[in-house]
Length: 82
Ligand SMILES: [Zn+2]
Ligand SMILES: [Zn+2]
Image (cartoon, rainbow, N blue to C red; front, side):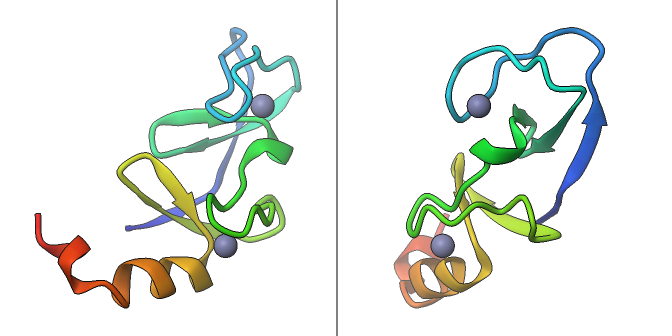
């Protein structure tokens, strides 16, 4: 599922889904219904930060860059059956 990265202005401190600490930055990312520090949003496979990308992919709570999403999900049709 393609997600647009949404930079959101912090109202109340939210916990980062990546590192677990609260977010005090003015802006954070909201992906897969969770909040992330800009630098904590990384592909779970290659650990490349996705901050500079304008989109990322999420599946079952894991975040993927485009390349890994296609490599992992599309190359494994069994994962698509749900
Ligand atoms: Zn974090
Ligand atoms: Zn990746």
